[in-house]
Length: 529
Image 1 (spheres, rainbow, N blue to C red):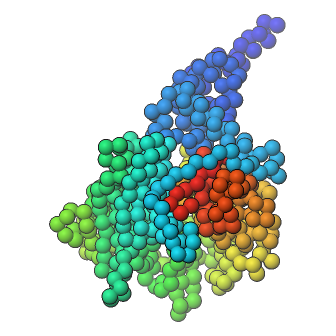
Image 2: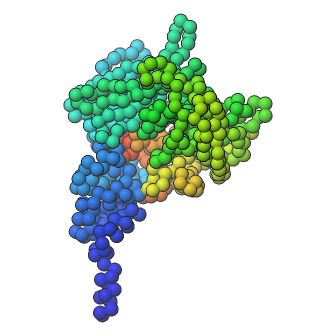
Image 3: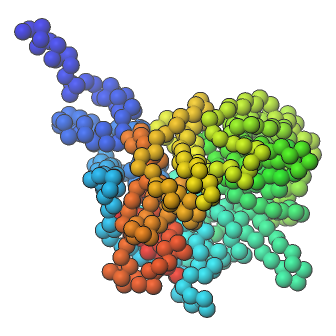
């Protein structure tokens, strides 16, 4: 008996040291930490007194914070614990009692972000289309086609800054939560000579009460011929694509490099541009081809941005406007892939001159089990890509689907590949409860979500008055599946004018907070699930 008693004492988890417990917590999920807090007062005390018990979990990102991960430091242990409980409850609510259950909205918030206006062709016009939005628990920032709008959700104060036509944008809230940086791709048209001028601007906007919405331009990029796509902002780096080149700039240091795709490719189609969540690395998804040779390569190109890039050349005396025409270039070499591949490039900047072409150094190509037929691009399956943090790793997710009705009849596969951005290992993620074959084509033709923390795709199911939300598999929910949500009964909320306009009004869904967004003329309707 004495031996058994000694063994029981040795296996008593409640008596392990605090440092050992916190080390174990790094390998657990938020749901596991909460479950442990319910087992004994000792574990509960450690969790309440050490916020890292939640912060270091594999899926900490499911917990909604005031303004990003850094704001966890502003919360007490009890406050973070309460938010974790809310996140777990939402996860269970969205999962439903079974796969056939679709939760309905429980509440609604209305946020007016601009003065009301009336368009001749109805409430949904190109003017009120949202390009993107960003928000904290105190502030909401809406970017429309012609302005950036700011709303203080506590006081109701509003501000806006007008711009030429906004094509795309990328936002990042500062660690303090008192300011936001926004990269804007703007386009203006001269009707006299039909000349189109495009710029990339990085602006800082105040979120403090005394200077709410005030702006300060940090940097503006100009060029003689400037066709831009896909602007992205992360920290001090801004990246975008123009012509056959990828531009990356450290806007604080006023430095930049241009990465040129192969000159032998006269056809380049860019699908998306991303930043690695934790590194100065740009990831580009594109197809290159040559009309004469008829070859086509499908690239997933990862470029590590060097710390020391050449300085930009000022365009005037403002100190904020810079020319891109003579920024040094890194020439990326030709690649022809018979299958979907990932290629890593390491860039070595050997000269500080502004006119010499630099060279790319080490490269590695990693083949994927992903269908790609260079000779049959018409029948090539469509795909969506996103990059997300996942525990101590970062994941590049690819969802592949048949893009046409003709392909749906013979190829109804819906696949999810998760690619580790630390060791580039590829894994196939099971998709449970996939869409009916007849709906796959229609599902992926709607507008993509522009909501922070949003899934790759949100689409309506009018036959069942539901919304399908694609939730990617993670450490706690290993399978990828479509979450079904009941659409709001708009007549119950005195919003009858939104009936039948789901495709035009639907903006996206926040998986972290359970919010479904609808654009409604001069305001946004947020339904809480």
